Length: 305
Image 1 (tube, rainbow, N blue to C red):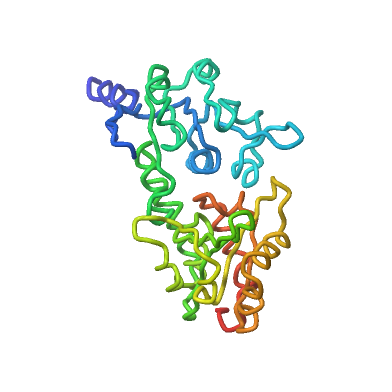
Image 2: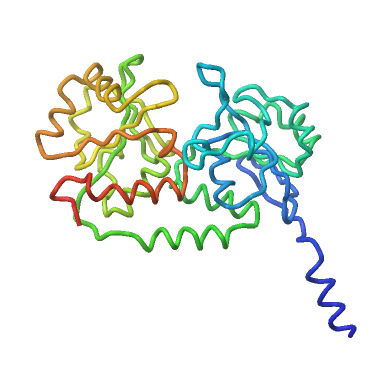
C-alpha cells in the first residue's frame, strides 16, 4: 500500500522548475510545466510555442491598415485569433499592465524588442529572451526554445516526422534574396525559417553565394552589382501580403534594383519562387511541411526527384 501511495505522490507532483540560460545570458528559473505563457513576438515565438502545444495566455499582435489585429505567421499558418490567444500587447508597444492581467507564469520575448523592459516584466513572471537572428539553422533555434520549455523530446519527434519526408538530392542549389527598392540593395539570407528547412528536405543545397553573408550574421544587404554572382538553381524571394505586397510586386522590386537579373536567372534554367513571408519566414514545422509538399512541382526540371 505504501509503495502505491509513494508512486501516486510521485506522479502527482508537479514537474520541477529548471534553470535556463537565455540568449541574453540571464539565468532564469523556468516552471517545470508552464501553463500560462505569454509570447511577445508573433512569428518568431508564438508560432513555435503553438506547434509545441504550449498553453498560451497571450501573444503580441499587429494592427492592419483597417485597424484589425492579427498575429503575423500564427494567424496565417494556424488561423489563430484573439478567441484562441488573447492580446498581450501590440507589437512594439509593451503593455505591462495588460500582460500582468493575463497572470502569466512565463514570458518569452525577442531580445531586440524586450531587453529594455526585461526588469519590469520579470516583476510579473520569469522572462526568457530569444535572439531570432543568430547565425544558426532555424531548427537549431527552435530546438533551443523547445528545450527551455521542457519540450525537447516532442520537438525531436515532430522534426523526425518531417525529415522522413526528405527527397533525394539532385545536385541543385537554393538561395533566398529580397530586393529593397527603397534602399537599392539585395537582402541575401544565410538562414530563413521554413524556406531553408523545406529547401534542404527537397534535396537542394545552399548556394555558394551565401558565403557573401559575413560570418556570424544571418543576412546581408548587398550592392546590386553582385547580383550576377547569386545564381542558384532556385531563387526564393518573399513578400508581405499583410502590407498589400504580391508575388508580382516582389519581382518588380528586383527589376527596379537589379534590372535584368531575374531574366538572367530564368534564361539559364533557374526558377524564381515568390512566397508569402508571413507563412514561410517563421521557423515552423507546419510551414516547412506545407512548402515541401508543393516544392517538387515548382522546381526546375533538372532538379526534380
